[in-house]
Structure formats: structure tokens, C-alpha cells
Length: 182
Image (cartoon, rainbow, N blue to C red; front, side, top):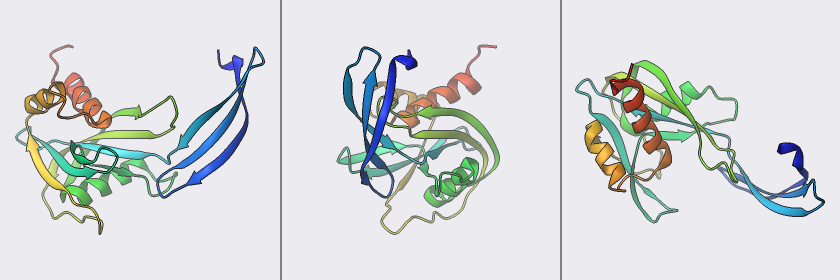
């Protein structure tokens, strides 16, 4: 199928701090042409931090695109496209929550919006947490909250949690670590 579609030109439309927007000129096997929007993102990481008692550390923060607060797992953009994702995850966990972890494992990789964006998020599980002090960016305001897995699943299915990386991480964690399926 990919041999039926070919990009013949890419034009940068906007370059911001976290993304670059392009206009792609596409040609199809049947001779038709079209313009597609494409957003490049250098990538990000996210962390599902699990406390000794099984509660999951979450952050509540304002999201401009939704014009409201959201409940999410800690996450952040890579400082550069070649930054080691686990280093980014470790930094973001400590910056946003103050916690550090002695045990890290890769949980899953997600592509957030495949129709028009190449953003990749590596999601990690952090266990054996050590409490500390958050180091928030100058204009970052975060509230730290803790929930059981069951409470978070209820929030997902009640549509209180809609952030895709958070939904995917919580359900993947349950499936991979809490399921009775062998």
C-alpha cells in the first residue's frame, strides 16, 4: 500500500519550541495529488511510578489545549532527539514528583497520533521509589496525587482520565503485571 503514496515535497510552515509543522505534498499511484499536514516532535518519555503500597503517583496540571487540569502520569519531552529516553524519564520523574527510582523497566512505546504526527513516547515503570523534592520548571505547576490501580481504572472508564499515554500506561501495567493470565 505504501508504494501507492509518495511524498514529493515537504515545506516547513512553523517551527516552535516543541514541534515543527510541515505541509507535505503527496502524489498517489492514480495520479491524484493532495496536501497533508505533518507535525514533527522529537519524542518524549513517561513514567508510571508505583509506590511500595501499590499506589500510583500521578500529577495534576493545567493543559492549555484542553483549557483545564488533567490527571496524568509524569512525562516530558526529550531535551534532544538523541537523548537516552530512560535518562529523560528519570529526570522528569524527579523534576515533577521529587521521587527517584531504584528499579526501572520499559512498559511500552506509543505513537500518539499516527495520522499526522510522529511523536513517540517511551513509557517506563518505576518501582522502589525514594521520596524527594520536586524541581519544577519556572512556569510549571503540578499537584502530586496518589491512587490505587482500581481507582485509576474507574477514572479512565468514567472519562475523567483521557490522556492517551496515561490510559495506555495504566492498562498496560495492569495487563503486564497485575493480570492473572499466564
